[in-house]
Length: 113
Length: 117
Image (tube, rainbow over all chains, first blue to last red; front, side, top):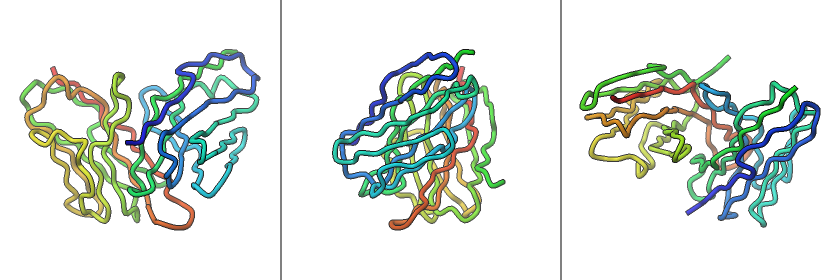
């Protein structure tokens, strides 16, 4: 059974810092990995999707990497802003049940001015 | 701007009552998911459909929960009878899931916030 772990559970940083969120998964037979953002009282917004054959994806100040063999992904946020404060969730799609996502517990990020 | 639409957004009901949540997936998406989110368990998959056919509902308590897709524009999740432990946020999500090529991004609705008292 796939298990996804995110570290740290919470992170508080001053504005402007670069930061890294970590995600690990136990079964490397994944189809893809997605990073989501969730604001309080809201649904999940997809930030980046990395196919299993890819190593990284970039969108603006966000960069996500994937090392499938070691079961790890990182989300790098450059020059953090207070508006980045949210919960960040990592989810993997299994190789035999494509589309079905297994989620980590999330990292609660607070960026203070 | 295409999005997944869920109703109701908020629901407070008494224990034992029936609750029906509805979801309109994004047009053209072939896969629809129901997830439940709680503080303790995080996001759990309840059921999902591909091309309206149920693929996996192993995450759902079968005695009280049921999920259906009467047509391509509507998915429903029903709880009967509801219990206080069902209090959670229920998310519907949809995606165009294919075996090869790019894509497979899953889009979530805003959720149905259920409180059973």
